[in-house]
Length: 336
Image (cartoon, rainbow, N blue to C red; front, side, top):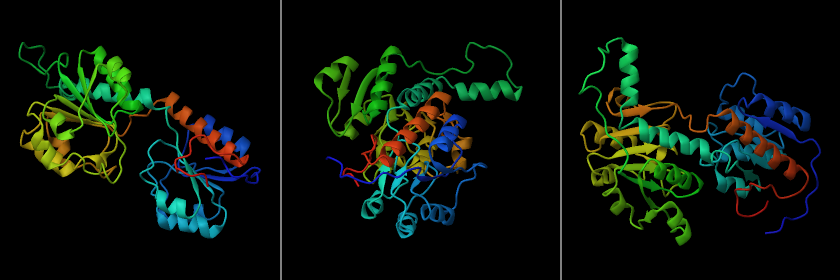
């Protein structure tokens, strides 16, 4: 849709909820009336509501719960018109409330594709080869040296990978997986064009349950939505092969973490590689004790280059909005 003419907002008041890369913060200070969070402490709900009530643009991150109360405070303040999210996922933002209050929402798509796909591939490699266990063994001082039967794992070449969500990241994972000799299968709301399937040598499964029963690795690369909440639950763990591995570098809430712990403990699946958790930063203590599990602190996008690019997208979205035009990365369907 074409944008409605809007007045420009010279040097808008911008509040950033967490520390961003220094070059990004410096550029923001040059362009906007910016308020930074220099100690990087997560803001409470009350602090977020206060910030929303006195700025033109709020720059939240995945750790901030931008709910209806926060957005109502922004609307009551009469200034908040843009949520320039520092991140791709927006499941922490109440988009319905943002739409109701006519607060535009942007994100930072595309810049984290390779970083996240690299992390997914790292987990695919590390879990069956027991790299986490091996590293802990060396650090413990209990390693007695090489043995013909020591630290045996499984190769990935020749195995089947099932990708749930074949967007930018899913396709990047598929490209990497083929280079390691994995056969690519995928489940997506919509089937990819034939030429893309051919390029990726990917097999589409319309029925997710059918795919889960046939692959050796499952990687989650879909967003967290009401439809994907606990997409992988106890019923679906029961469908998987006992030698299968689950990889999740998307959102923790896509997996029923209690069901995952039970499946791992019972040997219903062989292992898991997790970069995200259902109740971050809390991690179910059972995961800390179970073998065959690699745990990472939500670092899939944690590269200097990626975070810098995210900041540049945030700045671009704010500048275009402040000039009275449609931001390039608008999340809401309509222009507000």
